[in-house]
Length: 114
Image (cartoon, rainbow, N blue to C red):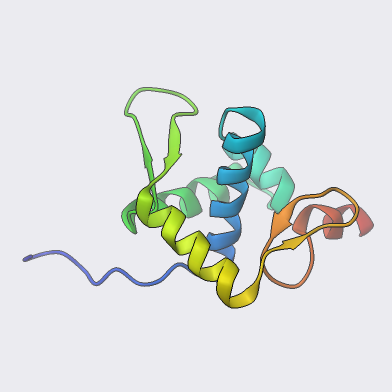
């Protein structure tokens, strides 16, 4: 295990990104693009979305196929993490857009209200 860092639990925002990926795959049959994630969360750059996806890959919660666009998949560990968090904090659904999220309000609708 030399050179391997300790894998930390996902942050609340990382869990929200994981929820968004899982929900997109479940409802649309494809994961969101980094631009779609950035727009949903109100980030100015798709790079922020890419960084969160990289963290989730490193934590073993997402995987993707090299050289394939939109080839994200939530791993078994990712599904377990989502299940544990849903049991612990509950999954909220936005009354306005129906999106699942964790935290203090739907990031997409909060952005629209600004």
